Length: 371
Image (cartoon, rainbow, N blue to C red; front, top):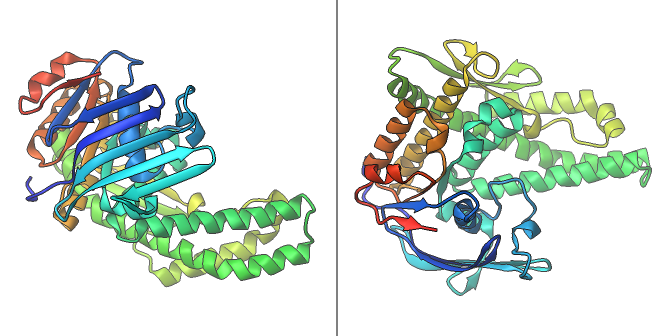
């Protein structure tokens, strides 16, 4: 698998981020194996890279919790290269200030994210099917934000509109505003909210349809089960929507809004939208949420991540950065070897953390790093 070029980080400087007080790490353009015992900062390194290009952590935490307890803020600075340019990307985050730069110019994470595409493999992502609907939606939404040129902006706009809508509903429930005031503001917000919801839902359907053949082929190769079928269902209020048009989504959302208006006012929270849609993966028409083994679920998410990597590279002619946080220990030998073979074939910069020195034998072309 070769795309001619791939995004790479030449070096990263980390100051005040979790337990990484002041580190500079030069990265190999191919495979970087980060070896070390638990609690030494391996995941923190991957987290700092992910944060710099995404604006948030892949672990549940508030941004202020990422700051080393002896510091007032953290700084991340990377020398990078894509097929279009070389530049530096940096961010400073403190309790009262946030600065993101590309070169010397200030920017935002919504502009950095589409330019520096990352695919994360970690134990939490492998549990996306088991962990519930929020995890499955996030799995797809993270993919969309780097695959679609305006994906990060659309996602942020949808989050803002949902937050604004929730505030009005909460203010009414707490009797800060009258019912008529709440209805008036909701009436002005709803066209924007529905438009953003329809756009994001339709993009979700597009990316799932595009990824499905790749997922099925990879899953078959990984398991050796030729002819096995993988399907995906996308349900809104219990109705299947794969293959539906934007117009059909629009009517479904607006009808549901009218139906649940009083419930939203009573509960003080938005009950209709992308955050309520369900994404389900099926193996041989069997719902993997309930009937697949843990090994099958992990194989399916692994196939999804590999499809994500290939589709991004095919679209942009440039492989994304691959970040793997101790996933080898979560896989059985068959899936582990399949993933290693995939990594050895793909032209991409890889940063992989592990506690097991034995994996270094598989990556002879890498310059091993150790924390």
